[in-house]
Length: 120
Image 1 (cartoon, rainbow, N blue to C red):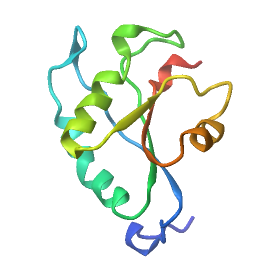
Image 2 (cartoon, helix red, strand yellow):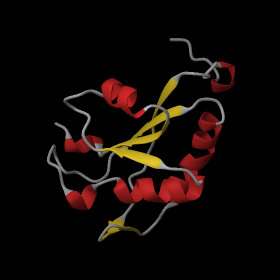
Image 3 (tube, rainbow, N blue to C red):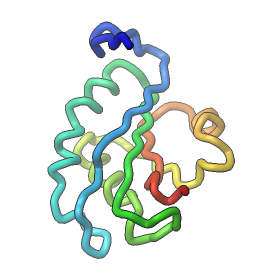
Image 4 (cartoon, rainbow, N blue to C red):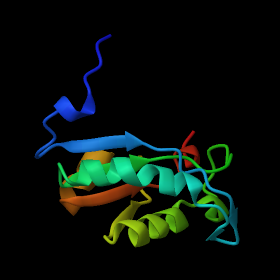
């Protein structure tokens, strides 16, 4: 399989899906260590400078296919919004409609899919 350097891709007008490790320790909805969030900022800034729709996906904990409010990525989205100084839209319901349909309805922006492990 051939891989192309990110710098060679023309991302203008594209939807970019990026898998990030945002599995941060939480205590009652507060992030205890944002090291992984900080590590994701350079690639997000790079992508946002080149396209107007970036979709992030990650997991948090091991909810084993069950929605668990304590393991929501909402606090992570808020932290990303603060660091990037822009709105992060949490897409919490995307399994039935599909991400493409949700994105078409929402338009452009920076999106965070809710915890992937909420879905079996």
